[in-house]
Length: 269
Figure: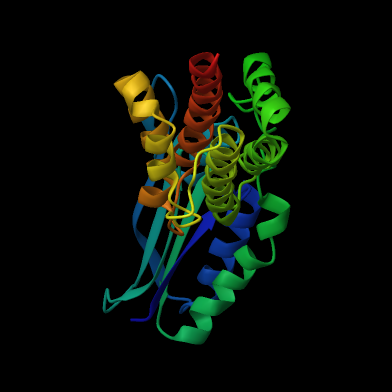
C-alpha cells in the first residue's frame, strides 16, 4: 500500500484542515469501511491525555499543547483489510509530520493536497529575533579600539559581527572568513609599524607574524589566545558551521586583537 510522509517545519495545521483531510480520506476509501484503530493524544506542559474521540482531541488541540498525535486507520468491513490511514504528529508545537497510506498513490496525493493548500495559512510566525549576545557595549567599544589602531581590521570585525544576525549558515561562514582577513590585516599592520621584516612570510602567515612580534615571549597565554582565535577559523571553515562556533570566532578575536595591540604597544614603549 502506497504511503507518503512529509515534514512541515514551523507549521501547525488547524483542526479544520486536519478534519477536511480526514474527510477526503473517508470519502475516497470504500463506503463499507470502518475506523479500526485510532490514537488521539495530547501532551501539555504538566499532563498528557489519551482521548477516546476526535472531538475531545481537537478540543484540547485548540487550547495549545507541546506534542500531539492523531492516528486513524480504516479497514474493510468484510475482509478487514486496511483501506487507509492518516497520521498527524506534532512535536514541540513547532513541526508537523503527516503520513497518509491508501490503496493508490493518486488517493494519497488527494489527501495531501488539503495540507499543501493550507501550509502558508498554518505556518507559525517567526519569533522576534533576540538581540545577539554580541550586541553589548563592551563588544562595540573593543571593536572601536581595534578600528582606531587598524581601521581595516576593525571594519572587518564589524562586518563579521553583523553576519551573526543572519539565519543563513553561509553568512555565519562568511563571518569566520572576515575574521581570518582581519587577523591578516592586523598582523601585517603591527609588523609594519614596528619595522619588522616579513618579506620571508606568506600573506596569510598570521601565527608566524605573531611570533615575529614576540607576542609569545611577552606572555604565552596571550600568544595562545591570539593563535587559538585565529585557528578557530581554519578548524571550522565549512558549510555546516553553526552560529555558536562563528560567534566564538568573532568574540575571541575581538578580545585577543585588542589585547595583542595593547601588549605590543606597551612593550614598544
